[in-house]
Length: 92
Image 1 (cartoon, one colour):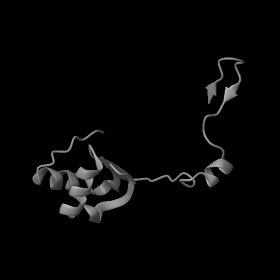
Image 2 (spheres, one colour):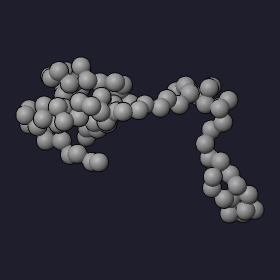
Image 3 (cartoon, one colour):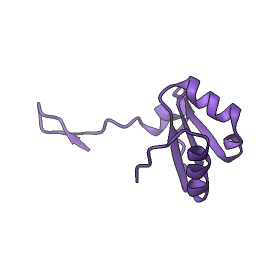
Image 4 (spheres, one colour):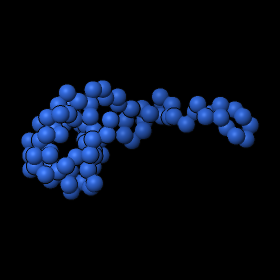
């Protein structure tokens, strides 16, 4: 929790459970054991997904430029992308 600088009261910037349930995106979702693949733009991600079998590893599309994939398949996906010339940047 952050401290409100005016009156030194603790504040919580997180939405309440009630607000999360009515938020347009729905309640928060926690994914475990996934790796994220983020592309420079949606066109590149669509090209990768449509031109390869990477779509078989997708757990969820997070945004137009980001997907969550099975973490256990990370090495395989890196080799797969590298072989096709995409040269992924790996951040651990």
